[in-house]
Image (tube, rainbow over all chains, first blue to last red; front, side, top):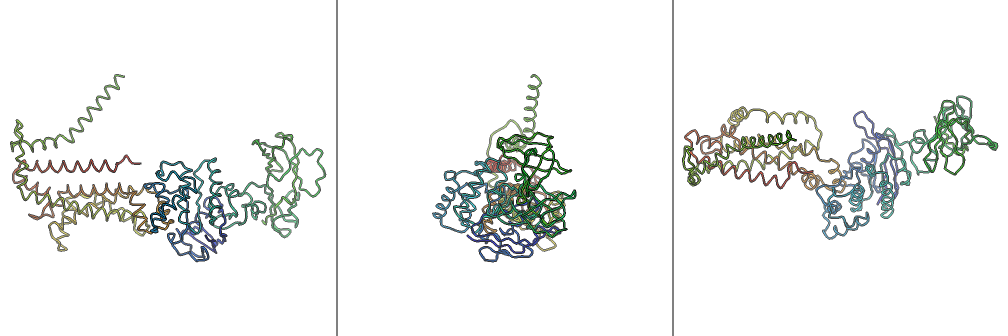
Length: 354
Length: 262
C-alpha cells in the first residue's frame, strides 16, 4: 500500500502534447477518479503511473520511491483493463494465479491466495470456468481478483465499468467500492462518466487537453468549480458571462448577478457565473416575497421534461436558455409558454474568472 | 420444390466430380502399386512384390530418409525463426518495418526455378556448393515466408492488452511470450509448421538444382528413377507417403480445430 505522487509530468506523441505539466498527489488508501473527455490525457496519465509508457519530463513516485523509469513488471501495481484482458487459454483460477505464479510462489500459497481473492469478489465457486463461459460482470470481478491477489501497492482501473450495462454498472460501483475499502488499497480510476466519478471517489481530478483543470473532493469541485469547463463537465450548470463588478457580474443587458462563492475577480475584467439547475427556484411570480438579496430573472418556459422524481424546465430569457430542475413535491407544475420568475441565492452562484 | 431437388442433386454431383478430380489419380496409383503387372496391365492381380523390392532399393530408402530429415529440420528451424520474426513485427515499431514486411512476399511469388538457379549460383559463390546442407538452407529460405505470413495472420487476432495485463502482473518478456502469447498463436505456429514441412517435403525444383548423386531427396530420386525407366516401386513409395501425410494432416486438423476455433 502506498501513495502515488505525480510531479510536473509531460508526455508528447509527435506534435501532440498528451500530458502537459501534470502534478497530482494521490493519498495512500484513497479512491481517486481521473475524469475527462476522450483525448484529455487521463488514460495516458494512468499508463505513465502503471509504467507502460515513460514521461518525457517529470517525476512519478510510488510509496516515496521514484519509478518514472521503472518498467511496469517491476512496479508492483495491479491493473484492470477496459475489456478485462483475461487470458482466454486459462481457467478463472489460473488467470487469478498468474501474477503469483510468475513470481515463483509455492503452489499451496497460490491456491490459498487465489481462493481468498475469488471469495472476495464472490466468485469462489467459478475457479474452474474459462473466461468465455462468464458474463460481463463476472469477467469484471475476475479481472479485479487477478489485479489484487498479488497485493499491489496501487490499483489502477481503466474505465473498468464502461462495457457493462447501466444496472450492472451501478452494482459493480458499489461492489468495487466495498472491495477497495476492505483491502484499503490506493485506487486510481479513469472514467469519462461524471456520475461514476462523483459517487465513487474521495477525490476527482478533471483533465482537459493534457492539463489538470481542477482537483479536489467531489463536493468541492461540484460546489465550487474553478472554470466553465469544470462546471459543465461535472454536472450541469447555467453559465452567465459578463464583466466583474466586485460582488458578481453585470450582464451585457445591464442585469447584475450577485455571487458570493468562487474566485475573487477584479472589477471590470471578464468573468462568468455558474449556477446549478437544482439551486434555482421557479415560480409564476405571484405572491412572491421581496427577493431581498437574491438573484431574480424573468423568463418564459419553453419546454418541460417530466422525469418522475423531478422535472426539468427550459426557460428562455433574452436569447439564453436556462435549465432548472424542480423536485416533484406535488406543487403545481408550470406549463410550457408560461412567463416565470427565477430566483436563487448568491451563495449558490459561483464566480469564475474569464 | 422440384427445382430445389434438382439443384441439390447437381450440388452432390459437383462434389463427386471434384473429389474424383482430386483423388482419382492418387487412388489409381495406389491400386497399381498392388498390381502385379509393371506396365499397368489389367486384369488386376494382387501383389506386394513392389513393396518388398522397395525395401531393397537402398537409393530410394536413403533419399526418403534424407527428405524426412530435411523436412523435419526445415520445419523446426523455420517455425522457430518465423514465429520469432512474426512476434518482432507485431510488437515493435522500427525503421524499415514496412519495407521488411513487403520484402517477405516476393519469395512466395518468384518461380522456384529461378530461386533454385539463384541459390545454386550463390551457394557455389560462397563455397557451400551442392548437397544436403545446401538443400536444407534452400528449404528454410523457401519455408520461412510461409511461416511468417501464417503466424502473423494469427497474431492479428491477438489482443495486445493481454501482454500488458501479463506484464502488469509482474511477468517478464519471456514469461509473457511463453505463457500468454504463444498459447494463443499456437494454431498458427502449427499451421505454419505444416506449411514449412510441405514446402520442404514436396520440394522438387530447388532440391533438383542443389542435389548431387547420393545426396538427394525423394522427389528428385523419384524423378531420376522415372527417367531411367518406370517401375511400380515408385507407386509403392508414393502410396506410403500419401498414407502417412494424410494421417498426419487429419490428426493435426482434429487436435487443433483449424477454422473451427473461436
